Image (tube, rainbow, N blue to C red; front, side, top):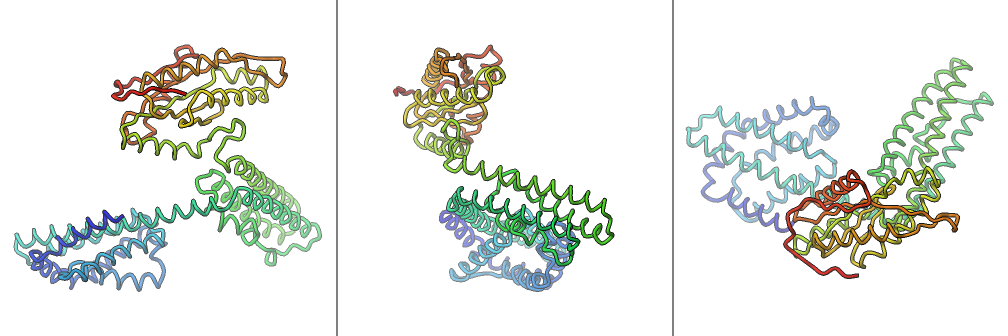
Length: 472
């Protein structure tokens, strides 16, 4: 952020240099009488925008922002002569970005708003009495100022959003999965009691829709509305729970109608649908609690290998290290051949035993600086540090051979089975996006499976320029 700040302030000094003072004075003389009209046009367009209206359709916002926007427009084209004035102007733009971040205003909307202002400024300048050369200078400078301003506002906005995301992640990390799991169990109990009390009131003919606490004021509703978006961001269950809460609301509105009508059949049907939605909500909460307990330490509960939680972190680090130090790393994608057939013949419990033993083999075949992940049902990924194409192929081939010879024990200790694996390898070739390397390894794995399985296929890459000696 500091380096960008220095760059922006230097640009600001150049824009408001002494040579541009006459141009600023001409722009201001033209724009100032039209500032109110520009702001009114800005609002007319944005108030017809379905995204913008929720941010602007408030009396306090309308009144204040109209005034501040006109003042901002005049300030932008007022010549700032001193360092203190330039610093104040710069910090003012940063503060606008902070405000947008606090409002959670979409950046696209901010950019759209700036486009409206820029187009209106240029139209006003075009219609002015400025001479041809004066008009050209004024338009160029106006565009430069507004473009620079938008960059500073956007970067200030992004900076705050990144900090907020870090704080959200820190909040998640400071609330243990055990505590969250306990909360989910309490929510399940609360939701069950809420439904039970409702049924009791209906059975006793004491149900009063007006007096009954709504689901949104229950522990379940409050948690979904205020905490779920913090702790379940990125999980598909979040959308499911929000939808279920809406469904419960709908059924409760219907229940209020049919109870007033004393329609017994409709009441029973509504209660049955309501009970189904509540039961599904309880199941989703229990499922989340179970998953969070398993994922708390970022390891797969069956194999104890790393799961996808840390894959991006590791791959980002390896990519950064490779680009900075010129030390190659590689990815090996592994898939068990015909694993569905194994599950069908020996059962899923024995399939799990095989996964556990394979995970142990993979861990034994890599060094302390390497990483082994379980990335799918029978899929694994190994990140090998400090290797080249030849070495990574040899390591993959050794793993394939060890697995082929190993006798996997089932739950019945007397029974053993043999399995094979297919492997695809790829070397990081300086591409800044690590997903590119994973994709190459995944494509090589697909070729290994298409080519008959139980083999290693290396991604088709240009020869690596770095070589190393791989040793356990």
